Image (cartoon, rainbow, N blue to C red; front, side, top):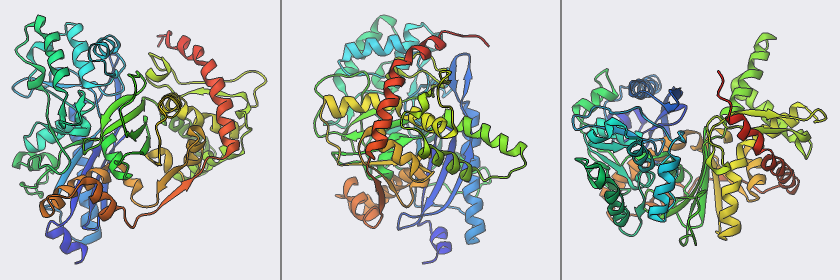
Length: 534
């Protein structure tokens, strides 16, 4: 069957992921290969101390991304996209979106990047004896309660960004279990929210005399392969204002970017892991057993199939690098030198391979926002050097790249050194790995473990991952007993290859030298965070 016929008969699958800087849409065929894609660039903004996106920007971005994909379908296959076999929505995990019973938004969307929930997260961690990170939805909810924010009494529903988009397209208030695990703790045996902790939180809300209970305002938890509604006529027009897309398409449960990253790298079985490195960086390791104690640096979430995962999440990764690359790009423009963006990244990244082992004594902190793993409340991007530092381009860029892994190293050392967690494979994906070899090589050095990158489809990232989950929904109808693990291993990744890079001992030693300087210099970053001038 040719692609035109495949598309016309709705035998494709659509995945849409709302990332930190880009909203990506991917259409895949019956062999799970991308055949068309579209995207829309966007940025969060700091508004009155809150990192946020407006919901108008959400829909503008989703529509533009889908329109871009539809245009590519028309151009490549001379056909109009009117239907697909199934759809999946994914987005940045965590954060806070609150609505009243009429569906009106009650407060600014507070993204994962906000670190204003320290008191709430600390109290809930102690109450639950379970780590509640600052960015989790339940921490945001409890913090607005502690702040006596007037909108809290009117809450009827809280959700994540993926849950919101899914709700508006289908009318269904649900989440995939992986995304739900970033809202409230999950009981992996029951495949639902932890009932004991729900009751504990209900007790905390009693003195407030709200008209709601926590169990009634959270999205329903669904597992991979479950049907999570279908595209409504209103949803079809919301996604495609041109009116070409037909209603009735089934949806898989909406998932978070962590879950789609696990799927896109086939890292959902025990002793496997993946690292997503973009605006933020996080490592996900599927555990064989529970950790021995609660660690504030380690989040416990789940795979889209409900297996327990240790997550090391850092708020900052490539934003500072991107800013510096843009600055160098401006210099080339002034010199009337035209350079493709990807070539510019490649040239500057690879220059880092020529650096001195001690990075010339240079130091960088990539903290655009607070970084809990390093004990930093407010971010201040910094680059530091002593008068006798060796300030070369090679040392400069290796320092920037090493800085992107600094906070992540603190959390990973807990898993590998304190908890003796075994990792058979670690796959990288995200913007940092688009420049071949160098990001992968230095990540392997930072973690002192082999890092692999898929040779195909990795560039589509989480959008491809949620498309796979949407396709799994179709496969489950044919094979009801099919597990997500078996689907990925036998039907998706059986013929896909990856490139593995072992840690180079010289790079490993170089990163150790850098981390010693990085840890000692955190006082500089902390002091800078105390400055609030304009």
